[in-house]
Length: 74
Image (cartoon, rainbow, N blue to C red; front, top):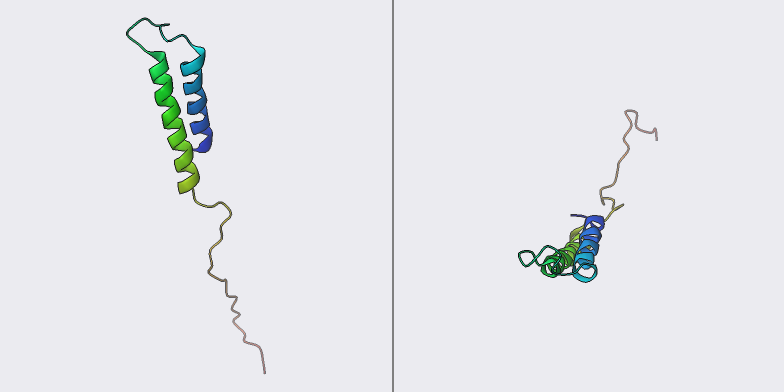
């Protein structure tokens, strides 16, 4: 899960938690609890994406050695 997906899930959770009435679907579904769960999952996803993501543009330390078939004359 990337940072973009994590932000989307976090935003969706905030909408479900704060913008929708908790009893919209009756007593069987608690939208505020689902929103809180989405916000926690989104926050964990952002942290893991930032911490565990490989560095982009990181090059290896191996050096390319150019060899010719004809060595230079001394």
